[in-house]
Image (cartoon, rainbow, N blue to C red; front, side, top):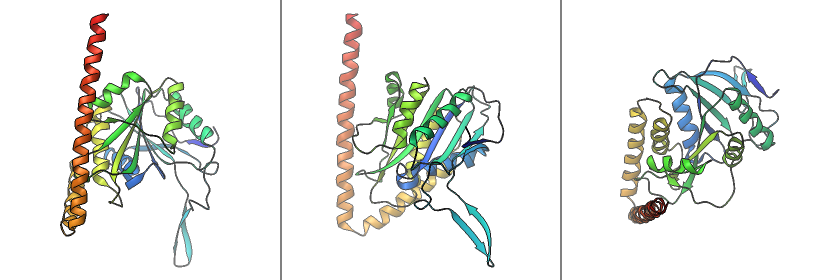
Length: 282
């Protein structure tokens, strides 16, 4: 594993792994924003990283440099870093991965990540993604998919819509398949960001973290992130209030959102009745 640099090998207890990727699966920066916030809030310690040379086109994602007084002070390449945090209130410590979706050699990249998870006996992986969607900024919209059918109920428990999607795939899809083949449970949660809001969407990052911290038994105060999201919503409301057409558009999105949720509740009720009847027959 020459591409992977291990600075230390912490003795982690039955760890969970949270992953966020920059690039295509990071609309509104909700994925990287969430994992960076989690890493900083927990003061997680860096212990490993993946060398970027084999996986990126540097003419597309160029290294960043800092020059001062005519002298180069820093040259920073795209990063893929692992951090860890000891969870004193749970039997599961936490690993956090902050990376960027690779341009090249997806299979090797996935094998590297899966091998690393197996090395530390990771029990559960939670990947975070973000996409732009026709959803209102006033509502939380989180969708997801899982590696094993029995995990779907856990998504419903935390108010995560089961994903229905066809289209271009992200590194999430390959990793979900690869982790599943390694018999590691995987959740892939996607924050659906309003397409009319650009920049870091803190309210969607909050919606993701609110769910995964409960799923992974991480006790953390998200109050400052929630307030940041509320400030963003208030700013958007103020701007939209000045544009009647935009206000009408958001109202229609809200109506569509409520209609969809009611339809999903009805479908869920039908599924529960069908499952009950099957149990009675057995």
